[in-house]
Amino acid sequence: MSTKKSWRDRLASYPHLPEVKEIPPPMRKRLGEGTIATPSPREVEESMCDVPEGRLATVFGIGEDIAVRHRATIGCTVTTAIFAHMVAHAAEEAIQPENKAPYWRTLKIGGELNAKYPGGIEAQMTKLETEGHTVVQRGKRYFVEDFAKKLVRAR
Image 1 (cartoon, rainbow, N blue to C red):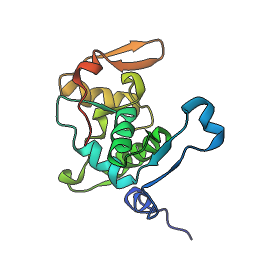
Image 2 (cartoon, rainbow, N blue to C red):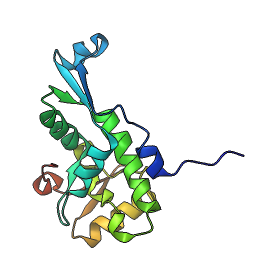
Image 3 (tube, one colour):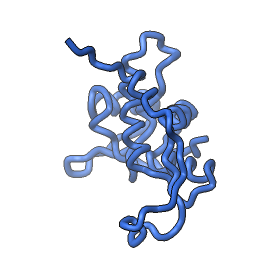
Image 4 (cartoon, rainbow, N blue to C red):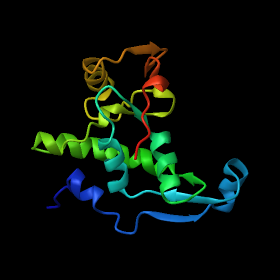
């Protein structure tokens, strides 16, 4: 019988990260020449924990900050988004409230709420509205109104 890994254990499963490497040839047409920084899960979690109440971050912004920190041209937003998802689930799994990263303050690109966070859109919307943010629906998607004015640089 196999035991399912905890989200915290999954976050610890990337000892080879962070890393910086050349932007792969297939991606150069879209992203250009240079280097790409792939963050460690711990870096993403620390960035998410640094967002104070009333402020917001985006996965793209965290990726940009990671690129600056590693002196890379760009940060890998795909990996950053995957790790943000894992951090959110690890936070909900945590027993101690002080061990819970305020993941709901990290939005997708454009200020969009993340349906893949624990509890989906409704849970994230409730937490954001409790902190004073206004969430608006555009079509089937949800966004924080005026999110750009509330962005904080992650680390």
